[in-house]
Image (tube, rainbow, N blue to C red; front, side, top):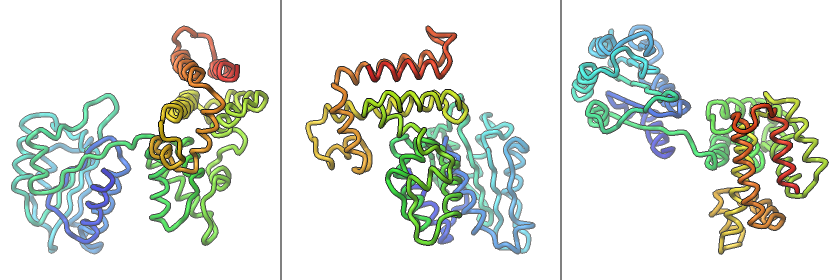
Length: 344
C-alpha cells in the first residue's frame, strides 16, 4: 500500500496527472497527503482563485460536484475540483448518483481534475471496489485504497518518515513513539515534526529526545513497566502502576493492555521459534534486531506455561476494563491485579 501511495505522489509531483482520482480507506493521513500534493501542483497559484474548488461532502451533493467538474476553466489550461470527506455527499449512496459518477469518470473533461477523498467512517462499511462506479475511476484515472497500518509496522513507518526528513532516529525512539501514540499517522507526523523543530543540526532522535519533547515520562512508561516485569522488580513495577493510576488520561488502560499483550505474544513466538538467532527472531517477530535481546530475556524469565497464564490474565483484565465480572474495579485496581499475577 505504501509503495502505491509513493508511486502516486511521485506521479503527481512530476505532473503526470490523471483526470479523475478516487482515494478511499480508513487512513486519513495518506488521503490528505495525496490531496495536498495535488493542490500544490494541479493549478498554478495565480490561477487558483477561479480554477481551484475545494468542497466538503457535508456541504454538497453529487450533482453539484459534477456541475463544477463539467465547467471549463477560466482563462487557464485546467481546473481542480477536490471533494474532501466525499462519503458525506448527499446522494452518494444512491444508485442514480453513482451512475452519474460512473458516466463522468468514464468520460471526464480533459481540462478538469476531479478528486474524491472518501474516508471510511467508524462503524460503517468502506467503499466497495467491486462496484462499477468505483472501478470506473480506475479505468480513466486513479483508484487507490489506503488502510491503517498494523501496529507492528508503525516503528518502521516512523523510521522512514524521519529518513524522508533527513534525520536519523534510534530504534528505541521509534518504538517509544509507536507505543505512546499508536498507529495514528497524523498525530505521529505532527509529534515528529515538533521534535525536528527542536533538534540541533545533525542530532539523532533518541529515546531521551522523545521523552523530553513528546512528554513521555522517562521512568513511568510501558517500556519501563515491561523491563520491571522481566527483571521481577516488584517495587519499580508497582511504582509505575501507581503513576499510571494517578494519571489515567495520559495512560489509558486499554493502551497499556494492548502493548503488554503484544509484548508477551512476541515472547511466545520467541519460545516457539526453532531459529534462535537474533536475525531469525527479528524476522519472526517483525521487530528491529535491536529489541531481540529484550524478548530473549523475557523468554528466559518466564516459562511458556507462565507466559500463557500472563496472556490469559491480560485478556481477563481487558474484559474487566469493559465492566465484565468486575464492575466496581478502577483501572488502577485492574492493572495492579494483573502485575501481581505476572510477578507471582
